[in-house]
Length: 147
Image (cartoon, rainbow, N blue to C red):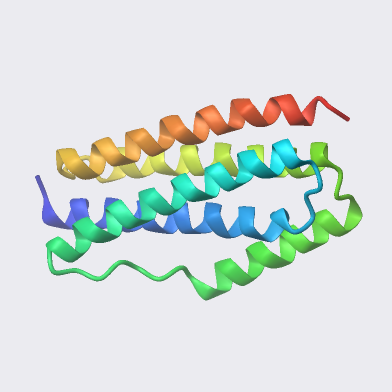
């Protein structure tokens, strides 16, 4: 195990989950379908759990959890506002969340490969998050098809 790889993978989990949670929070105010809103709240809560687990592990190792990149956060908020301004239909929002979940899972897969010397904890947490994001992506299909 490499401490650097462990730390980097944990930071990636924090960043990924934070961005996912932020995206969900941005779109929730434009979601009027109660079932869909509930699903998004559940996703945001689980994203927070991943962020907290990775952050706690970093703190145990004497490291600070990385703050989200302000530029990336700003760009995310702008993109979400632009897309929801065009249409706040559940299907459009679900498609946007689905693509975000797919992107998040792909980024974590790359991070696991890149930080292959990370320890079991970080690697398993990243894999658990990938499974979660892929499952969310599939759940979003149900709402995308509602057009």
